[in-house]
View (cartoon, rainbow, N blue to C red):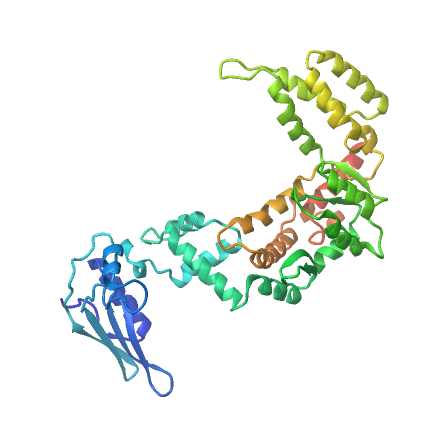
Length: 447
């Protein structure tokens, strides 16, 4: 079979790419069998063969009979071979053996070399992996960018593992993590057990520490169920040795955490996340109401939830007592629900009812959703196949930098040409600018 393609090229890469495209169009694929360099280390010769050329080495593993009985192989010693040589700074191509010992494939996607990622595709995989994208999402993007690509999920998994090994550079993930913390401007502490395994790890970027120390009025915390709260809180508390400790700490209702906070931050007020409370009430109370169907829509549950929210928003203790008494009368027939609320939540009313929480400077923060969003992103990195703490830390830092950069360049329209914001736009968050604008509008209306 003659090759209906040029025989002379200005580079070895261009030569190989051209013959590969032709081979794939015919139903087979090529690989580089052998390359040779001159004394100066420059590539001078290249042998190219069919990707079904060669045979498997039977010197290791099962015996030949077992391999033939149990295995399926791609290599069948196909003799097809091309040879390329560099002469006078040009690459010349010739057909050394024009024979194949197999039929060509109508679907070339079964050949790994035909699915090899280009440099541009590898850059896409790298960027999307760093952003926490899953393999199937990356494959969809690659196929959208190039409808002719044959890439499959396995190719992306392999590329991600290759990237991971490149980043590790022969180190274990935990060694790479410690190196990243040392070199990445982090403050960190860890403890090991008798076998040398790390059992506790606390780390925080120094820029985050500076922000935490400067804006410590309200702190949000989201924790896993099983954790040594005291060890982590002790190290967190050391950040405030020479500055005021947090005035308010908002958490979920975890007794062990709440007890640990009393020890570590005895002068801080621990408020409970009202969103988590609502979720718990939904779980424990809604089953006591008639189940809604497509044909029957009951407003009883919505009414119950509305009345409970009114109790939570009570601005005085008297209002709270009145609304709670009325609530108990309304739901006299829901004794289980009343008992659940009295036993579980009313003893903690000072931590979530407005009549008490408004006594403290909490900046309107009564939920932990913002920190949970960050925690969810953190865990998403760990849940991918290549996920480890090193991967998380290195990519979270990039995400943090990107968020800060985005805040600096995205200025709300109301602040663009307004002299009121001239000295602060680009220096404070968009959220802060909007809060200032709200107060500015209120002041204008008052006058």
